[in-house]
Image (cartoon, rainbow, N blue to C red):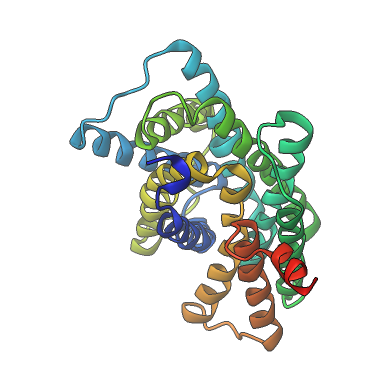
Length: 302
């Protein structure tokens, strides 16, 4: 069975839900942990979870030095750096806004795919789908009330993080997806590398600012084990099967999850335009994934 034939949609949806809820868990974790503490502990718990899982399932650990060098680059750009940026950003603005801004990732991915890596072919329909998805994100963006302490700085931090995300997706696809290692092996190495990057900060910066509560402890554990651990296994799998352009659209679907979570958990109000934005995003994701093909509409019309 070739990569294109392997089932991946269920993994994509699971990843969307997991990352969509991560912004909520970051916000709760910040009640006890510092921004550095959130970044450190989510990566530590993620690495521990994957090392244990790798031992249970008898996965092969990465040994080659050349692959480790590439993984260290990925661990910084996809974990250590954005983990810090998001944690600091959510001290300045609402988690729902952070989740929506994360949806700039596919646009950065396409930019790097076309200008730097040139490793994947992107159709006009997919470009149209990406643009349409960004419009859906803007519709969601228009529903927010800005209650943070320094929204411009928070937005800048998140855009720096998503720039790293955007580079990471095609980088992962080109340099690591076909190394012969499983998604679990690569994700485990990636998180170990990110822990190494964060160790100097962990040793020199305060990791907590308040007493640990069960809510914050549970949130950081879930954020680490699922949102930072197994989520990257799923991310490697989707990227290796369908490519980075499609895989990066997970950050279009995540804001929809964040909005639903805000309604279900935080009792935030959902407006008609919120539903419209969500529908546009889901429709755009279907176009990028080639489940809906607009070019066929015009061919049939002619």
